[in-house]
Image 1 (spheres, rainbow, N blue to C red):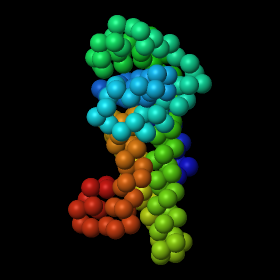
Image 2 (image 1 turned 90 degrees about the horizontal axis):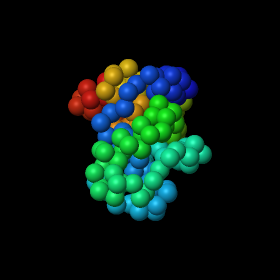
Image 3 (image 1 turned 135 degrees about the vertical axis):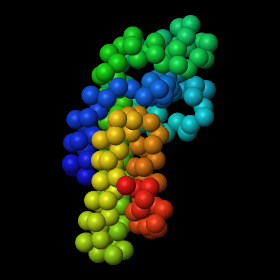
Image 4 (image 1 turned 90 degrees about the vertical axis):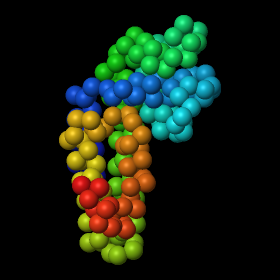
Length: 173
């Protein structure tokens, strides 16, 4: 898990944003600032709130009275928010909580398998979980971006490691 975190944290600043990453980050920050969950309602807010948590300390420029915000056009508002501030800094710190969440998923997998089948199985399951995450970091379009894939793989894919089938083994890398 330490290797996963190191690789993901070292890769995060070198990766450009995905199409929806600025929207998720800006939506999460807006939730904290306005308590209005109307922006980007098609996804649950927890991951966006977690990703935007470090931005509360950074304090980026955010104006809820801005024209792009009031129109509700997510992509325009997000681009304005991200690039009016230091985009690289916001993206990096927005990715850190989701990287840690994915590592937590690997730890949960290790502990669960260890309790069920012993220490060796825990090591295998934890290694497989982190290997799955590391392979995603190595792929340019699946890096540690602030997308729901990283959050979902962080906890929900753990069942794939612990209850493998032919399809799941193929999908997990």
